[in-house]
Length: 212
Image 1 (tube, helix red, strand yellow):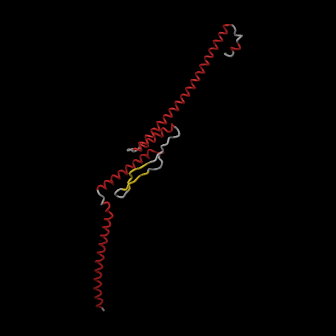
Image 2: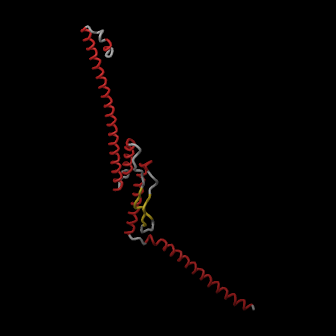
């Protein structure tokens, strides 16, 4: 039986040798698989063409410019701003989102009075033109605000003119009344002197009292 054991021992050594080689091969395969997997994950970037790379750079610049543009509106707008900025996005060749347009809502309504509307309209214009590169829509909003300012100034001027005319009319009426009173008093004095000279003062005394 010992021989059998010896035979079995040799067989066992042979099997261990096979197992060792198999494990080594399996480890090599796993390493190869891991490397291949890593390369597969990195492949999308490596496969971007020069044109796609240029597109990505352009999208990055556009994204930064759009955010700067809207933040300029917000920084100047203050209490005119109605909510934060909203953006429109596009997906680049690298599957990332980039902002390509933005919008900020502001209050463009007139104030309660023409006097208050003038500074508000000026604030709207400053907010619309705050970015270094105002869009056509920005310039349109500024133009409307300028018209609103001009209208408010016209209303203020009209009110001031009306008030001035009323004050002048009242002053002229007072001056006319004062002049009439002066003329009446002068006429009374002349008439009184004439009566004295005629010697009939006593007879007209009751009438002179009306003028004295």
